[in-house]
Amino acid sequence: MSPVLTPTLLDPVAETFELSETELGRLFGVSRQAVGQWRERGVPSNRMAKLATVAAICDLLHHQLKPERIPGIARRPVAGHLPPRGRGVR
Image (tube, rainbow, N blue to C red; front, side, top):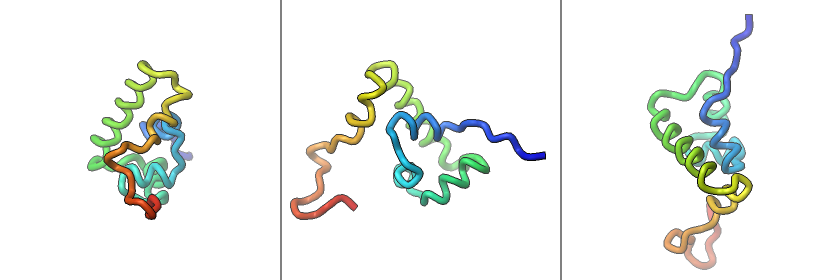
């Protein structure tokens, strides 16, 4: 009998911010392969607090903004966090 996969908090985060598996991994400081494992096996307990916080932010943004505008707003660079001139984002 195959295990039944249920949606995790990763799904609303990825959908809200329109993130790929690689971008989700960057958000949580892991590889895209680790994100895939989280989807199969569950999110490790040491990552759940951050995931729950980000998911709560997504929920708040959905209630305060038009959902289609969230990715553009969330990805807009903040003046104090721009890379130095001549250097791209890594």
